[in-house]
Image (tube, rainbow, N blue to C red; front, top):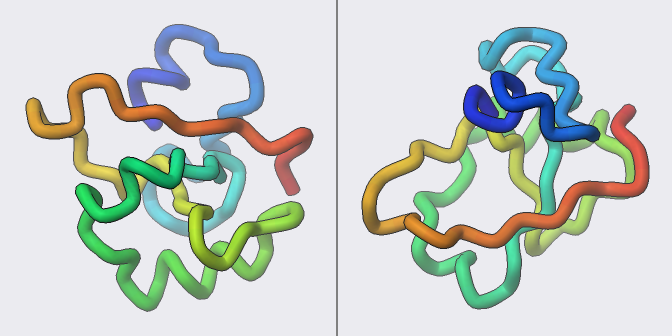
Length: 83
């Protein structure tokens, strides 16, 4: 989320600054990357309820995805609109 916000990626609003207190950094993770991510914590899952058209299988808050070298090349798709 921080990288997207800092480089002006359209569609990543990050209103809460990464505190997992909104859903304005909602992304859908490409199917082949899902198993490489840690599962969402309960707070993230709760916030996704407020996202616009979340996909129960692929939606994540980008502020909760810890970027590591193992995620180099991660593919996410932005929703048509945020909350």
